[in-house]
Image (cartoon, rainbow, N blue to C red; front, side):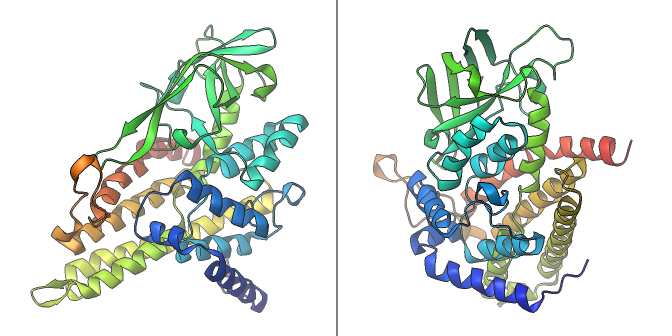
Length: 393
């Protein structure tokens, strides 16, 4: 694969870079580069800026608002956004739910939901994990009972990221418990978060932040028209969606920006009176991460190129991207903690239970990224998938 850019591609890169410099709000960029939490308003404001430019959903078909960019342009755009400190739009709507609707949705569902996702009108979240059903998702117990023209949903979801921001949630629910095969009898529903019977309860993390939640469903009425694909065939949808989630688990551009920041810190911090970057053991670890990230970049481009040529969704081998990408994320945070040392102190609580805004974000960020090797299917599960589906073991 030729990784050199043509004159036209370099011009496109400069266009993206210039537009980001002029249009990425400084307060949002600073939150990203300083590892602060983004509010719902931050996400929606940035989404609408992108939508006005026509760049909110570049990977979608042109007829639904996509840009028509080729594989190289999409790669360049992703890299430049990550390098600039632009936040990735939460993937639940533009990436995940949209991919499902484009593949499995009815015309009515596409016309109803896709324009609002594209324009940033609705904030979507994902209802997959349950207490006791994480990586073993097929064991889920949230039930949806068909009653005429609607389903009655009862159960609980957990670790639901940004559910407190959500307007809509797509859920895996059990519509038939009679089969011996757990993957059967599962359906994929679209649920309005304003429906009576839904309760969102925050799960406060160790650093005092609110990112994940429990979501409870008590006799929640969901119209049958909100069923995607066939009843009891939701596992087919779930597998398709997970491939798209794993493909985007680790942004190469964002990792490159993080690595550049780590190099700056390593040149500034001292060890035995000399810059840390001159320490052979530290430099060896840094070099290994750089090599791993370069390999991740090439592998990602290879997968994207294959998808472009075949028109097929990401297969089981995309687990390699999720596996290695999240390991690189964690390695960078670990090395940054080592570089900064005691100055990476966690948040310090002040009067009233709030957080000292001057405290370092590095420790909370390090701990937060421990989850990277768990979400979208734990890395142990990814190794099993690779062994079974790709290596044939």
